[in-house]
Image 1 (cartoon, helix red, strand yellow):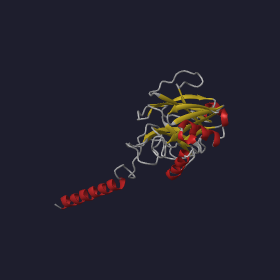
Image 2 (cartoon, one colour):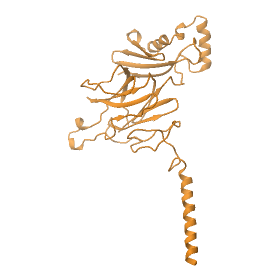
Image 3 (cartoon, helix red, strand yellow):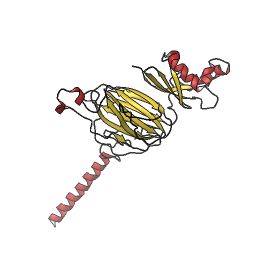
Image 4 (tube, helix red, strand yellow):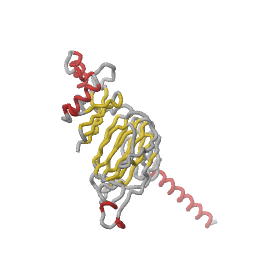
Length: 295
């Protein structure tokens, strides 16, 4: 009887300890966090909770002292109002990205088609980046290489597929297949480049107003005949490129969609996303986001 009583006490204490560990881990597992829906070799990002969650895959999450520009991980995430791609590199610097819409994606340098799901195609080319350090090390046996996936097919509402399109002369390029034209915004941190793909446009306001109240004032002025170009999306985007970027009349404009305009001037490239801050037809437009490449 004494042995049975002792065994019962051990079982009760063990169950209590398990319940304590479960509470400490929380609904998302150890640490109580939830991660974004990812398809990658890298960790999930922080930020607003994605529409769906999954366990983060293994991979680097912080800057390291590896070879600068060597790709470390790619991940994709789905949020309620946009899709996201995160490119992570070894080293503490972030390669400069040239981002632009193209009719089709081809390999660099062979110029062969890169098959991608989607109706619209975006090229992202990182200058000073690579998949393999063999071309730049004296001893090939000591070369380091990216070992993660080179094609991701998340099938998100906007981002359908992503694949590498070239690794040539320190330019690492990717093709993105999209279901529709996306407004673009980007951000950089040490070793990390984040590209957001918006089905419409981000809610931010960059130029010539930064708030709804300023947009109301701009609207009153436009109705009185001042700055009438603010009432036309294409003209507003063009004025931004001329006045803010300073590219002048040399820039060539392409309307990618009703809210997205692409400008080229020599090797310079900009994708400008605009929106109507007052949310009504016939009202002023404002720049919501810009991604630029100006070597």
